[in-house]
Image (cartoon, rainbow, N blue to C red; front, side, top):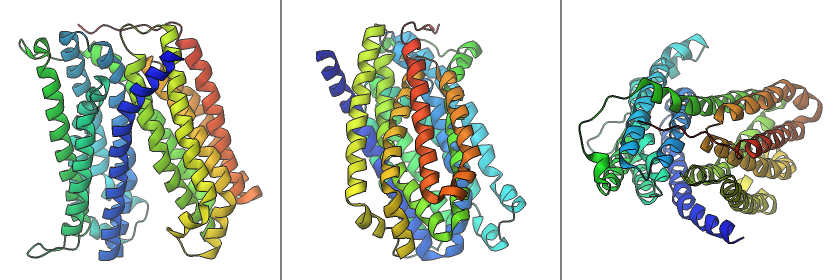
Length: 441
């Protein structure tokens, strides 16, 4: 028990700053949406269309870079290996970030192909280019953040997140409607604020990482070496499946949203609100999962210490998510009224809130196991399990919505999360016994 207690303290020390950073980012995103909505509906619609590509692209790039965390954590006691691991992580980030930026640049073509109204297309302006640049910076920033977490230095991550959120919110309020001599930029203003926030975050996180590396003289000494393709590929074999898991989840949940919207307009609105609440609470599991990776990837980790670390992470995540779920159930109506005043929407939310709460806990548990498998470099196994389970969810979501309404939709989501948790638990239990450690040269 002493080992679990020590791990809980270590996890909270890293996960708390991470979660606060994510919460600040969510709050700044809401400010940007509010500024766009008050300025012009077309601008908000244009930003939503671009975000439909930008948001999953950022999540996928970040997920791919997180695959480098086990390699960085393993090398943290060896400055030269650490330098090599960071070089390979940056190469992977630039490659994946370039692909994501290319996808964002294609937003006008994709939007026109699916029939987005011309007014919305005209409102895009420079937004795709600005968001593509923001995505490229986010890829580099993700390396610094992942490295800091892997080296147990979360404080610069918190500072960078808070500064980025403040920058995004302030610039959105200034640039979207225009202020003083500044002309109104609309959707482009929101894109500029997103780019500026990523630059600020990358500068602060990068400075924190340089300070940490300066304490390890061997990590900075000697000529820079070119990245080795084989080592980059090893990191990619962990990171790319993790990015794929994110894309599968985004894609399937998008289909589930369409299934919910077919029930009625009120059901679609209620589902969107419930999904937003899940996203806010899911950040807890993501923060704990990131903090877990360096714990399980430590050079001296054994099967026993890995299991102890996982038990600590599950305990912290479960307690936190159960508390969030209890708040949603007990204070469901007041919380729902913050998002809508439609009585049909409120009634639907009140009815499904207990199922949503259960889904939140199960989703958090499966996420922690997923991060555990990433720490053991078994993210491909996690991706396979997740794809099978969420593929089944995609197949049953429409029949469930037709037969049982919104309750059926959320029971299906909760069931998928439960199956994903069980599958990843079994995979982690097997993988934790023996872990092959790759050594970077």
